[in-house]
Length: 386
Ligand SMILES: [Zn+2]
Image 1 (cartoon, rainbow, N blue to C red):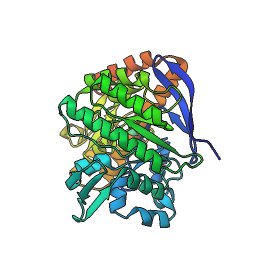
Image 2 (image 1 turned 60 degrees about the horizontal axis):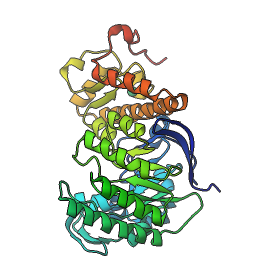
Image 3 (image 1 turned 180 degrees about the vertical axis):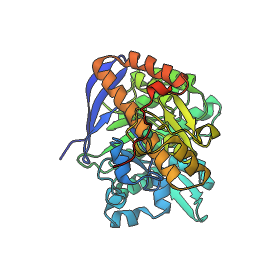
Image 4 (image 1 turned 120 degrees about the vertical axis):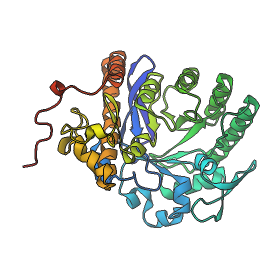
């Protein structure tokens, strides 16, 4: 069996390229984890997710405990078997969703009582029960149960919330059952206050986890404050453990995160955008509903090997979204996940060759630029299948 650990293979400034070794196979980092909230990456088959090069996906404790229930997933062979993803799975602890989705929530020092957003039934999550549920789901990476304060909040409230989360992290660790190749991550909290972040890192490293996440960012503070908080936080985190920035972000956020020493990311942006006709590309974003795409025979991107780009025109995708056809979200989600994975591969390669700054300049210039010219596009745009 494989011991759960992370090996660093190259660094470029603060950026790190490495491999996460797990019971469910290795993952090259930096990595982006597509979000599979309820046991599915929305609108994607698992073969399609695999084809993009994704190495690890996310599941969600809050959603899965309510439906279909953790014990049912366990009885059906665990989440890997249930959703047909033999690779590593990280499960969110449910803390964030209880705060954002659960109705009539009641927070106390022991945990949170809330009503299901599906049927109004009452449930309770504690550090212990969240950890047990993630065990029942067979999550490769278990997250600590934490409290996520609504922002903006005064510094005293952020501090009190962070300290509660640190007590809960110690209890999550107590409840965690060590298994070969599996790991548990602590979550650094403390808003945008460097002293609180430092206190949180210290509390978590005193307990000791297989990896460390940075939570409570990308909640409306803006990119500059997120980056400065990362700069104050990642240097304090253990060098030999993976670092995961939760819920981030845009391609530019991922680039900035990697350059500040982050190894793992997750975000609903590429999947959600795919369902609303928004495509991420090397030349910024496209809205496929826009009338200018109605007669455009070119692919979304000349550099993408996804099914949407190799077989279909922008005009066809535009038509699918205008006609509300389900294939539109399927193809565009595929494209967006493929773009995010290509971006992560480019960053990994650039770290290995010491050229991350050059890549960053090229990427940023591309995102600012307008669309590709006809000279840069393949002609004919989309060849017919034989
Ligand atoms: Zn594509």
